[in-house]
Image (cartoon, rainbow over all chains, first blue to last red; front, side, top):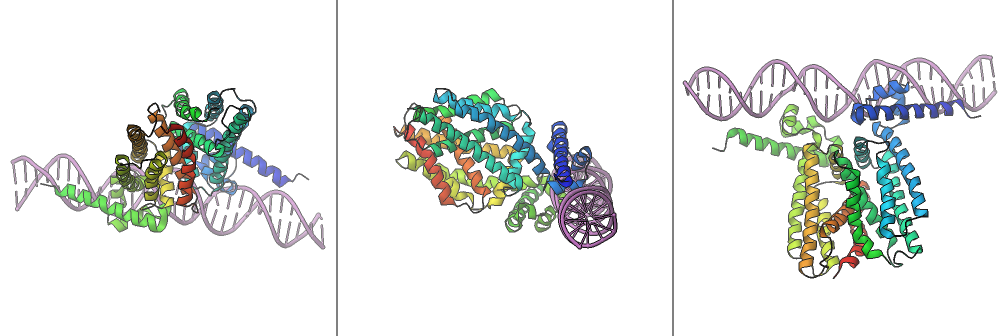
Length: 204
Length: 204
DNA sequence: TTCTAAAATTGAGTCAATTCTGTTTTTATG
DNA sequence: CATAAAAACAGAATTGACTCAATTTTAGAA
């Protein structure tokens, strides 16, 4: 049988995430009290801690949903990149950045990033590291694709290049979420400018 | 006169920082309770909060000492860089990295980084951003120096390049402090490998 | 020296995340 | 079905960062 217990568990997970997402949006991460989340989700405080090790892990679950969506969207670009190295990179990184504030506010990103460095071995810390690696890998895959198309020199170290591009973008994104007044177009322009150096170096 | 009040103030600042540094090292950031720091520094809890807005700011003061020392050490390299682009970069970034664990444990770095993204507008958050900018600026200065020496092409965008190199190093350093078993030589080797792409692109 | 206002200190109290322990619900077994 | 073990739940208790009203200390004027 499907198991009553398993069904209830999945249901409670869902209710907690939904309640938390709503309250995080409304009141911010700090403003959303665990008791309030518990109340909204119709479970007790103790139960929440039965499902998540700490408040941060709840946010972590929400962030993971978001990043996985971004990874999915990125696949399309890798499969069918613009026929120009600079545009191809800009398109892929653009997808990451444009999607980023869809579900998560800057404050939520700040908290999520903070937690992932604070507790790198907690469930969310590990998940976040894995997501970063997936994004790096996707950039590396794009480079490999461009090499296959003869747009990037064959002797380029794709692994190192992928890391370089991801690390730079990620750091720029961190600075971006730290400043509430920072805007996406300026962020993308700054990253394009940085990547121009690389594009010039690797173009076939 | 030098002012009794001012002297006592400076003395209490020093005692608090010394007590905190010792306890952070011994018990870790979380393990060091404010009451214990207050006791060790022979002031009350309230006084600590009169000097620092929150626990993170105490750590922030310690981090700032460290980073300023690193910046100082870096000046020597910029003034007198190795006569080879790759070595020059490796030497400067090497100084940053080798110094980094002198006073601060990986756990302290993790907490410091977390706090600086969590509270970007707090005293420490702002200070940390300024320190990052100073490091970026120093890398940019090194590139300018190398251009002056004719080792780097004149038409390279030094600003963008400095950001790219700093951001990549910083992100690598973040990953480094997240994994307790990670070692400095491997970190430096990975960064050298990444920078090799850039070095090839910008060498005159 | 004495007095007063400003500045600084104190520590008991507040608040919210997390832990703990006893209770209830579910599942598996005879 | 009855029942015992296992899993999950509830919410009271704990913990520790941070606040605040009362008290003490300092600077400087008279």
